Amino acid sequence: MQWSLNASGHKYGLAPLGAGWAIWRDAAELPEELIFRVNYLGGEMPTFALNFSRPGGQIVAQYYNFLRLGREGYRKIQEACYRTAAYLGDSLRDMPAFTVIYDGRGGIPAVSWSLAPGAAPGFNLYDLSDRLRSRGWQVPAYAMPANRQDLVIMRALVRHGFSRDLADLFLDDLRRFLDYFAKNPVRHSLTDDDAGGFSHT
Image (cartoon, rainbow, N blue to C red; front, top):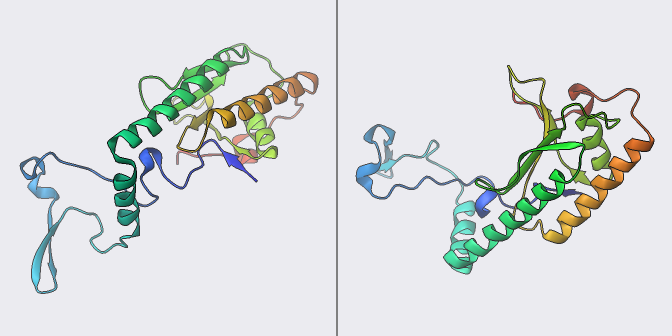
């Protein structure tokens, strides 16, 4: 079984895959140039969707979640994700090999980190990502876009279903690999191409 810190049947916010929403307070706030008028079944249908004809399964799934969870249910789920992300951020900050770039506070429930400046832990983040994959964790390592390609980071988005228990299992494996690399430094580190990681292009 593989676990991804980004794994879930839903995107962030419990939106089913393929569904996304933009909500205006009232019709007057929706710019007229965004509205397409489509001739549909003999009448004019205004829409501001990019693709007018789409399957409706994701909408039904989202509506079900609205009814089942309500505002309070959504709030509790997202607060749990934020707490788990902050816990991961604090735990990563305690590891001298890493510099935490974003600790899960003040934005989305996610964390990102890089190798600490001047650290020589015996690996790069592509090596670490590869090792984590051997334990079933899919945590990408990738270089930043142009003009910051010298910075390689790892990131994890904490979604519904990634519990505190799973965070502890992930951190245990991470510490295990830090110990492993300290005893077995990598002689030929992986590159972005070797690792087959994420690309911004």
